[in-house]
Image (tube, rainbow, N blue to C red):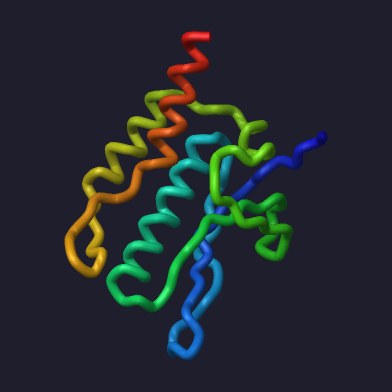
Length: 135
């Protein structure tokens, strides 16, 4: 099985029908390591909480792109288990902790409470790094 090289990622906003708000992609960011992908997944979760939880207007998901052009191939991404993500360099634990530190300072209103920025994908990647070091 051959994999393609992921070059960029973005958060895609899905607005609920009938509401006067735009749907579509957010700004693209460069993807070079699995750390970038994990951060993207956590940012999509954050945006989904902010938009859906607070306003009930939208949800969001992560997308990965395979070219340098905005119009190139984009694919929805839900987990770190995608073969093209696994083919990327892992990054370093220091990079993961830095991304986590930045996000821990951010809270979002979920409609009932202020909650911290989701860190599930970054925490999963850090755990994978620790397991691979032991093996």
